[in-house]
Length: 489
Image (spheres, rainbow, N blue to C red):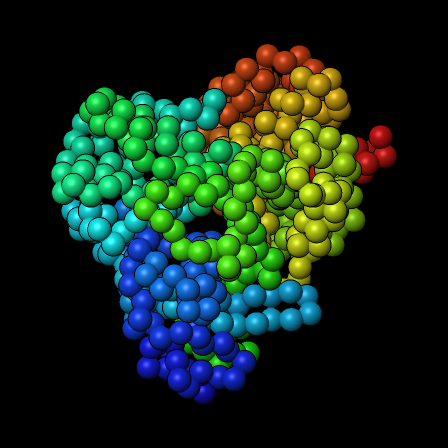
């Protein structure tokens, strides 16, 4: 008989499920977080859970927030569990479950006035966010896009904001009106220079309606850069069933993840912060080297295995890593084109780091899907792959593997696998991508002419030629044959 997760159940948890390890009644709020998805709960919420178990930082508990109506379902699930989550860490040789109790409230999603009012309370000293790479309203050059429709809506009516950034601006205005110092804005998304990007989007939006307040934000609000890392797949009935059958817990929205986790951050918190270094967070003067290493080797590596896996009808990431052609493609591309374009990182061997990444991708228990890695390529490719390509072109190095990766993404977006199976929409811009991918079958350059993605890369003759060769071969011969030839070259 399984036990439904709740505060009252904590004293009766099965022996192999760890309780939070602290009295949740002693917690008080300090952080308001936008985006209560799996990654946040496997990462930031888990670091805080560790800290609270040490009796430290008990006044930094989480308050959840969300801007979309669709987030209400997740809130309802967590409310029924007293805001708790079961976290299951899985490695090839072990599975460990623990209950996280670090969140103590979740404001009704899309309730702008309530969210703004909560940010204006003095106990909220950090506002953090995990809103995915596509949530920052950037153009093809990773600059704030003032013409994005969502930004235009908030700029036209800043008193009734609909986006995370509009609500944060309103919250900062409300604090200033009350004579309160501004909270720190802490980005937890996989974006290069994520603190800088967050600052640029926030001030860019504010400047559309109140330039003076935009200047005030730039001068008074802290935006620490950070690098975050933990492989965390989506929750399905598979995960809920494992938790119920193997651990005896009923949880409507558990989180499964790998055992590895990393958080590297700048120490820039004017109103204070929880002592997260005691829970394993690494505070450094400059996050950039760690961030670039992770974005290019890990996130770029995910793209390298995702699209051939998707085209070859492979479901799980570890199954893709078991395919000899895909695993060898990843290693060759990393060693010849990606790692040579990653600057040195303090006290880190890039080769050893890639070996670790290869083992993490191969974890058979995670249940991470190839489809998840293929998701949202129109936002991820410009951040995780194309910067490496630009550097390789500038250095005159090899680009054949990176061009092939781009061609594999294009071929995937055509909407059908090598076997003829239909690929369900898997990008916010799927219909447009599919139309262009079909055009590129006859004229490969059409794919590169998507300025929002490739910018001026379309005019690079060496890249355009390599891309066209790869795409033509993928359509003519199939993924396996093209990978095999690349590996033999």
